[in-house]
Image (tube, rainbow, N blue to C red):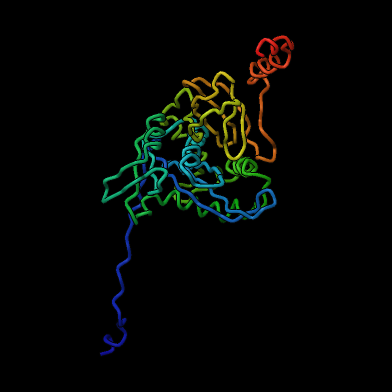
Amino acid sequence: MLRYYIQPKRKMRPSKKTVRFETQPGYQLQHDWGEVEAEVAGQRCRVHFAVNTLGFSRRFHVFAAPKQDAEHTYESLVRAFRYFGGSVKTVLVDNQKAAVLKNNNGKVVFNSGFLLLADHYGFLPRACRPRRARTKGKVERMVKYLKENFFVRYRRFDSFAHINQLLEQWMADVADRRELRQFRQTPEQRFTQEQEHLQPLPGTDFDTSYFDIRHVSWDGYIEVGGNRYSVPESLCGQPVSIRISLDDELRIYSNEQQVASHRLCSAASGWQTVPEHHAPLWQQVSQVEHRPLSAYEELL
């Protein structure tokens, strides 16, 4: 009778059991994003940060950005591989659109840009099962660690470049030297065992810049972001391709050859002109201005 009364009215659900999964050195990197509110250049804004964690050593790299789009996702991985001095065999991601377009019961359709990145660095892309984020628990713990450590120490920044500069120092001085209780080692120490198993990096970084097409006006300019930028006059009336790096460098191409470059500026800064681009146009104007009057009399 007593047993009846002390039983809970509702049966307790069995807990979800998870086996800790350890990977071999150089095999896996886990990628995830986090976000916090912070002050950047005197303004409160949302700071997104990508965390890329090596599965074996738990060493990680962090990249702060103003948004979580595909270009910043790929840039975070480019910087992480450069930081580690090599790439891995597999990269495990969540089902974010920058990497995964569709994940239906394990049938994954990856973003074409992410596949190009994977091919460039020679890794196999892997996606978590939907609603099964614990499969990348290592990197999710690092997201929490950043919020409770770095973003508690630092709350105000001059720019996103300033955030990343502080992060690089913090990773070397703090994160790499923290003790991993289950191993009684630091990530820095475990990385010495993992480093030799990383895949060598290609000769060039993957290009993460934004890509688009523009049409050159007859006065030798293209419009980007509300401002105008000069292009060599020989391209007037022709289409050109543009690439904008994440640090706001505008590169202009014709037939896959770079023909001009500018720093992106606000419209208030005025049109951006390289005098050499339009020198032939000004020569033509100068010739018209210096025609003798007799040349016009012949037309009458």
